[in-house]
Image 1: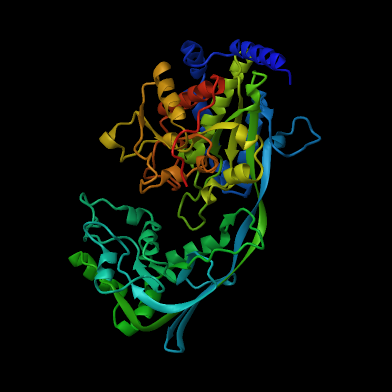
Image 2: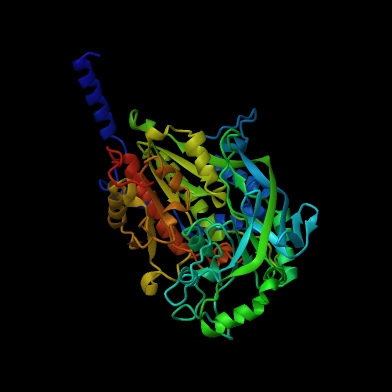
Amino acid sequence: MNRFLLVCLLFGAASLSSAQTPTVFDNPELVEGYQQTITPSELAGHLYFYASDFFEGRETATRGQQLAALYLAAQYQAMGIEARGTLHSDFPNDPAVYLQPFELEREVINHADLSIRVGTQTVASFQYGLEGVDGQNYLVFGNAGEVQTTVLFGGYGIETELYDDYAAMEAVGLSPAGNWLMILDGEPTSDDGTSLITEDGSPSAYSENAFQKLQGAFQRGMPAGILIVSSDDREAISAAAESRMNSMGNLSLPSDADSPTRQIPPIYTISEDLANSILAESQKTIREIRASIDASVTPNVFMVDGVHLASDIDKGSEIVMADNVVAFIEGSDPVLKNEVVVISAHLDHIGMDPSAEGDQINNGADDDGSGTVALLEIAEAFQQAVGNGDGPRRSILFLHVAGEEKGLLGSAYYTDVQPLVALENTVANLNIDMIGRHDPEHPGGGENYVYIIGAELISTDIDEINTRVAAETGIDIELSKRYNSPDDPEQFFRRSDHWNFGKHQIPFIFYFTGTHEDYHQVSDEAWKIDYDHLAKITRLVFGTAWQIANQDARPAVSGAGFN
């Protein structure tokens, strides 16, 4: 191309760009006007319906999730925002054109059997399969086929400063590696139920999250399998097993048939009766062991002499469908419109629990109803700006993903399989997940904050933009970096959909206000949301998106990145 002509074209494009919508920093009053269209009442209006029983807990690849996706699509259609899904329809008003459907493999358990063997003789066998359950055990996780080896009793499977089962194992030369590891659920407690391993007596993470117990075992070499002894009665375990049999199995993106499948040790929850059968040769019972540990707060670990445990798991799979929802506002700049800011939230939750008494629907008002309705309000504010001639220079893509609760599946499909805008033209991802409540563990106990996670990992620019937007538009809120480190034990920086953008070196911010007592519980309801605070954070996300969409330069990839 002629150099003089090229210079003229570039100058003309730059002149045209400079006449477009100003940034936050150029005209904060303009942006504040659109921020104020994001109101607590409109957020509540969406969320009270979105987090209602009508959507049946929005379990991925179920009717409830499909209804939720269509509701969101209809909202974008009502706003007049362009569809960017992958479905075609002969009907001009069909909201399904906003959907990006994708296939998932659903795990089907044909059978999962446990056998207790003394020497070469099977002394007891317990089945968990499609013909029913016996109320003794149920498979939590794992796909390894046949496993048979010795049993190590590992106490509660806890390692803290006040109590450490793994240190006790190491002191006598024992290791979970290659053994079945049998551990108790919960933690040492006093007679009144208070914890004996925390400073204030409150339950530790080992009681709140059973998978916390697995980390210590996996860090010391892979066990052959894990048995978690439940303190629930047999009826409760049976109900839990039946619930699992009737619910969705594990979901994943379809695998390559030629690719090797990673073998994951089987993890079972078992009854005290079954555990006592395993311990019979040791002449010990679970009740006696619990009482002994709790009384002394001293670990009790030992090999179970003469006993081998055998597991036989047979799993199959079937294909089911899930849906992302994708809407799009094209940028006004003839050059920058080819770049996109992706704002995301996950539309799914964890569905229903038929074994629960009373309320059985996990409505997920905070997780992630709060992020979902925030995204709708941000989209509406941008669309009003478009109508007033203030549309963004870069394009904005509004992405509601399914399958987050199953392993970030919808966002992985979007980034790894079918990105609807080329990833090299995706300048940033602003991801919103759980911004409607307050973290009881927030330092200082204050409520006027939002956790900013990952903003410095890919691009220090995006972190500086977010911080300055809060100041320029008068959003009085603490931008906390409490969970920002990849070394943080909670690992929040990898636990939502921004992860799948970050792994492609796309700058991101994860907006989050923390977990709480209703996290993944049926009690996560719309009336518990702090709508004023939700509106404040939503306005911040809108302002940051506005700045990124309208400034001349995209956020530079300047951070250390992450693996």
